[in-house]
Length: 178
Image 1 (tube, one colour):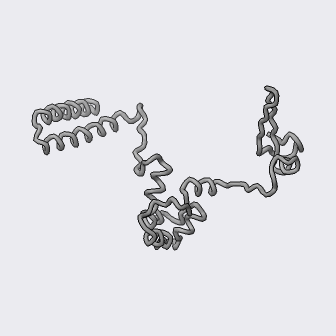
Image 2 (tube, helix red, strand yellow):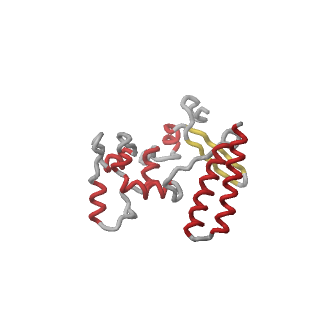
Image 3 (cartoon, helix red, strand yellow):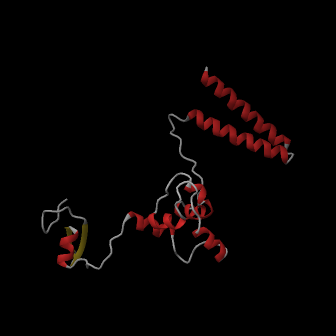
């Protein structure tokens, strides 16, 4: 969409204003927005890196570390392969190589928890049509784990029921492959 003022550049800013119940929308480029006074030249623009840095709370006082010594160690971390430091990672918002994940692991778990609603492990999703066998496999793994727990707790009657469920699923699985 083109700027409604100059009709030359693409509109990057959208303003909505409601006056006496009438909504007026203005779509302008950044240059025309500055000329019209919608934004000041002193207003800072934000990049994706700035957004991610804000999400990660880099450089904030809310760092989840027990004491200042660990805080200093985290900032002095450096990847042995690409020599990217943790400060470089904070500033750029990108890793230098795949080994950076391991080098900065001490600090990354708290960042991933914040960004991913407390999850630090990717489990993924399985498509229903294609993943029938994977669903059965995961269910068998869960039942085997439950069986082991029941045996450890010496609840042998419940364990026998779970064992029968496992056998039934394994037979169904073998029948599907035939």
